[in-house]
Image (tube, rainbow, N blue to C red; front, top):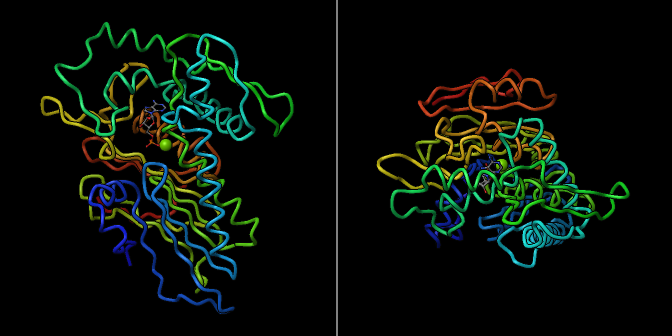
Length: 351
Ligand code: AMP
Ligand code: MG
């Protein structure tokens, strides 16, 4: 059964947002475990999307509440649209002093920077000035007039450079500091914050003794353990051009899947689609992919990698994912060609 309830039907826009990301499909025929544990499901509107948590266990309700609270807490550190967040402090002090950041922000930024380097700058978490230039900081993305000219693009590009973001930490797992080298630079956490929040939710569920659960946050779904009947959680990957269709179902156990798509946030300009993922090298929205789904060990990694592969495109993206242990990907290029990486868990994919 699809996860569509009356709750979702109240708000068309959010249904749209929800279905733009991965759509879950659970074959929940058994709601009761052998040990009588009941499946508890809760949704919350947060992180600019719907977040859903499913968990088995006697204290699942309390655990889910705590997991949602943890996601709110971590998001309040990272959200670059919240003026009080640590990332906003870094952005507001660009070119000035280093700011103190929590261990969570250190961890998320340092991991993200690792992938920026690994991708040769295709992923660049200082993409903010270009995201703004192309009209994607608005609630509903749009572009008036002809759009940015090459001079404006060049100017914004000069403020995009992940190597100019310095993140330091004295002690492993402790707080740290961060500083952007130039005024006007701007860290954008859109490529990884939901994945990281999903990881943090899973960590809280585990602390409550929950071993079988699933957290869906926008384009990222993180699953631990199994369903009550012993079968694996299964996640549907939506068709990038047919909103209600799935391309495939992916089994997920102690792993995470993230999808980046050109259908998520976009507008049309002169008959051309302009999507929210920007190539830092050209300074323009990427127009070579429809969608990329990545399976990895954590939500942070799958989220970072799906955005990375979207920018890298089918050839370089496939090369990178095949070189990384424990990761796999399903890519759909702009002309609808499928790319299935060596370790992708299912061979049946219908476009
Ligand atoms: P996702 O949906 O996880 O692929 O993340 C897309 C979001 O990441 C965009 O809405 C931007 O906020 C941000 N973004 C866009 N282009 C890039 C890029 N090249 N590197 C890092 N973040 C990006
Ligand atoms: Mg991402």
